[in-house]
Length: 255
Ligand code: ADP
Image (cartoon, rainbow, N blue to C red; front, side, top):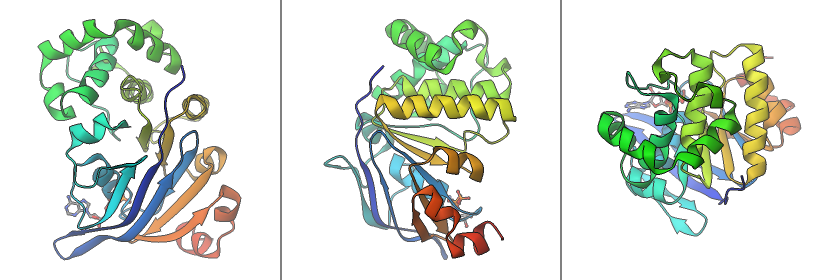
């Protein structure tokens, strides 16, 4: 199904945690209908940047926009309303929630409340599940989990839960989709299937931001790559340029 996309732009974003400079003026642009990878060693600030885009943290300085809309400093539900959805590195689902209900709650989450509150409220989950049935079915079909719709979400293996997490984010019909390490812990087959899925999502229209450790997957999928190290921009370009970038090779790939 086609989704509207929007450009995400983070400009000169700064963030300190106490004495630690997590981001020292980082730029990231993600275009609709494109996959933008954000890579860098552990601690380089990738998750911090995602958290600031989503409104979990406030920026110390800098501007974040979705299309023409300035979302800098906006709370998570406002950011969600502007069309930003994200997946979490470790998908957690409450007990006794089915796959269908978990996905249904994704749409609910984006429209009305923040994620943590929705996940704690079972009755609301169930109510949400009635609200957008056909949309949920569509997204479950897209990620290939339709046959598991009535299975308990928490009982599923990690790879399946990650796909479920993507469906949950998609049901909000995001203009910008932030994928936080969706491939980690998956076997080769699962990564291949995920790659097919991510391309399909990209082709449907949203700007896709891929925070990812699997460098091969990044080179395979990304239209552009942004590389961070210690909260600073190291390089930005097409995968072929990044693969041959001297600083990326020496500092990030260790070759
Ligand atoms: P990455 O996602 O690239 O591994 P992070 O964004 O998680 O990097 O971390 C960047 C730096 O900010 C790290 O040094 C990390 O310890 C620090 N950091 C991240 N979140 C917090 C926080 N809530 N409080 C204090 N320090 C944090």
